[in-house]
Image (cartoon, rainbow, N blue to C red; front, top):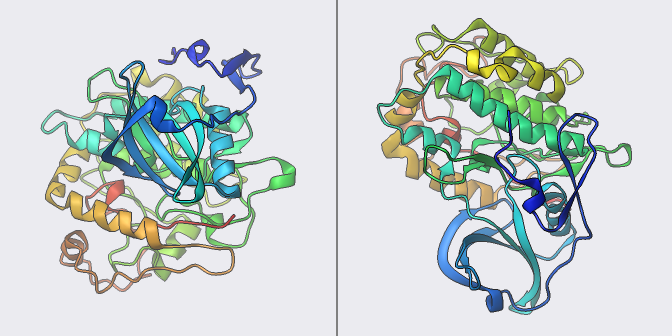
Amino acid sequence: HTYPVKFQAVSQLSVIGSPIGRCTIGPSKLEFKRNAVTEDYKITTQVLGLGISGKVMECYCKKTGEKCALKILYDCPKARREVELHWRVSGGPYIVHILSLYENMHQGKKCLLIIMECMEGGELFSHIQARGDQAFTEREAAEIMRDIGTAIEYLHHMDIAHRDVKPENLLYTTKETNCVLKLTDFGFAKETTLHNSLQTPCYTPYYVAPEVLGPEKYDKSCDMWSLGVIMYILLCGFPPFYSNTGQAISPGMKQRIRMGQYKFPNPEWAEVSEEAKQLINQLLKTDPNERMTIGHFMNHPWINQSMVVPPTPLHTSRVLTEDRELWDDVKEEMTSALATMRVDYDQVKIKDLDTSNNPLLNKRRNRPGAGQAEGEGGGGGGGGGGGGEGVVGAMVCNSQ
């Protein structure tokens, strides 16, 4: 398929050859503009989102009137790394483009300002939820996974692991039918070269590979695990390894992730193809050495022949819509958790939500089987709706 991005249109990038047969982009020298960003852009009070390392504001280019997004980071080594890696891959397929970079002072502190294209279509699952009664099919899920996979393939070819691939970081360009899904937020991204092996567990529950939960080193296979979880949610509307206890990661859930214990419960999975289930199994392997690589993923028939995937109507929209009235509460709690939780190598601090008054959790607790002792049984797949954004306990790492 052809990419809906024009690589040559990105001024700071130059095209180089690619051994994988795709157009790989190499950036020129990263340079920050030193003039005040307000000379070039009108910044509004509209907050578009809260990333793991800074908030994103709406802004308009004074010269063209183009609506853009401004991400504000306090200058530090971690922020520099985020900017450098995002800049390096900015011209890649299905990756949010950086338009300009500024270095300004704000309240006596040096800040890095990233001007990006504005993703007005919203988050992945919100976009699906907004379809209402229009059926969401397995073929559409395959096409979405192909696009996400293309972005990950590009990153991995550049020896970069994103490490926080999750629905909140997958945004649509517009609300139109021809919109494009793109990956954003490189706050956890790191190079995967030998001298910089990934050893710091930074993650968000449900999208975290088993080895990240322990002391083992991890690499690009973290992103493959995330692809498996997102694919699972796309095909049914709820995540695998679901926990009814109200904790982000409880001992039982942690064990299920480590052991790769999940199910494909009916009725949501009754009509889903065996090819899709087998692909998920390859992505959710607990041993990263056995887990499918991005190359194998992109060459899988369910991905590279997505046009022949059966257009089977899925339960996803229905499951997501069931919790529509709870969506804002879930997002507010996630935003709070993302802003306050920290993870470092030696200790995982988890916000205990057992006493939370979150309506989504209360709804889950009151469902049949919710009182089952954590750690019993073999799988948490059938926990019910809410989609990826129903995950309340998200985590953030501020390690340098």
